[in-house]
Image 1 (cartoon, rainbow, N blue to C red):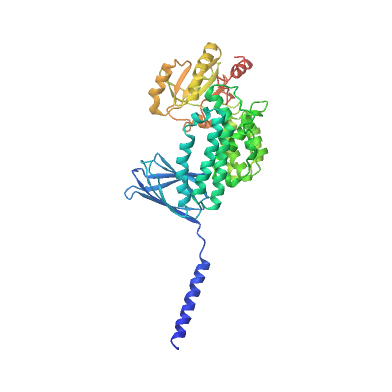
Image 2: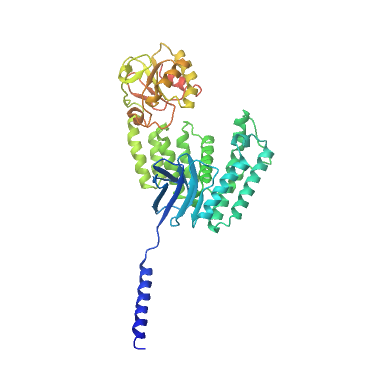
Amino acid sequence: MKQLFPILLALLIFVGCKSEIKKDKKPKDYLVLSGEVNNFKKRTIELTGFNFEKKINFNKSKKSFLDTLTHITPGHYTLRIGKRPVGVYLTSIDDLKLIVDAKKRREDPIFSGETAKINEYLTARYKKFGLILGNADKLFSLNEDAFLSKMDKYKSQLENLAESFNLPSYYLELEKRNIFYEFARNINNYQAYHRILYGDSEFEVSSNYPKDILNEVDFNNSTDYINSFSYRTLIKEHLNNLANKKKREDGDYNLTYIEIANSIINDTLIKNDLLFKAVKENIARSSNLEEYYKKYSAFSTNKSNKEIITGLYDRLKYTIKGKPSPKFSNYENYNGGNTSLDDLIGKEKYILIDIWATWCGFCKEEIPYLKELEKKYHNKNIEFVSISVDDAPAKERWKQIVKEKRMTGVQLFAGKNHFELDFTKDYLIRGLPRFILIDPDGNIVTANAPRPSNGNKLTTLFNELDI
């Protein structure tokens, strides 16, 4: 008995220490994402999600990767393993491991970890999507009854699939709403897409068609906004349709869009994200820069987003009407030699600059309209200048298209894309084509001139300037 008491006392002290250790231990705030990959030779794998991008190092000798992700937002992500995308669901703390072949896409990934069941479901869901809906053109080409029947089948079969996987209740609820958002998007887009595919601008769905399906959508669910690509796209499409219908008298669609977003969206996360992405993409296209910036600043409450937009605005202030145009120099001229903007200024001519690229389909659609315009204003007080912003290796392709299309005016080759050139960066050019009109003294008339194909807007502007 004398020996037993010290032993019991030691055990109590040990147990007490263990409980103290457990009490002091911090809750896990990270997850370990790992995997084995066959038939893959690159050094990195890209993980993308809602406002998230990260490159994960790949060990080619061990054919594996491993990364610790801290404070990650639970939701759907995509692992881009070479040309193979693998959709995954990640929480903030549950480790996930997968085994996948980068080339054999018919072989399903093998998952292990707490979220394995969810990720197995995502793989099955992806296959079911293709089997039921098939090609988008064929889907939206169906007559109304056949289309609605297929969509009903799609929705019910996906819901049944989700229930058959015994998914966690929280995820099953999220997924059923996600399925509905996909369903609602297609229902809402059917009339417009069917018109395009059939070339029938007069096509109307019947009175029995579920036109009001968007009335069933809550546009202020931040959880779904983070988790569902279809939900985010549905909101943007809805705002886009409203903006096109309610476009301001001055025709500034971009300003109308953020005004409508501010009036319809109440959720802070959704509003800030929508406004930031729209303004970051389109601030250079607004015809009312000052008003556009002021309204964004009033609508947004995200400090870091506003700082980024302010930086863009501060650059664009120098490309408003009346400011001296940014310069380009020594671009290769199709007819020989090099040409700079200074070579074109001072000849008592306006300058219409077309920023385009050989890979840009919309750019090439403008070529016949631009040629017709150049023919109409030939020998008048305006010079037409086309600047190709293809990378250097595409020079021969540029020459070939200029020759084949018999492109007129001054044809220049920059040798870099529009994200790298100082001239296009100064104008904050994100999308192509872009038309810029400069006066004879080298000052900006408009940094966003109408496209030649855009009715009579450009010729009306020319007439106002007495060109």
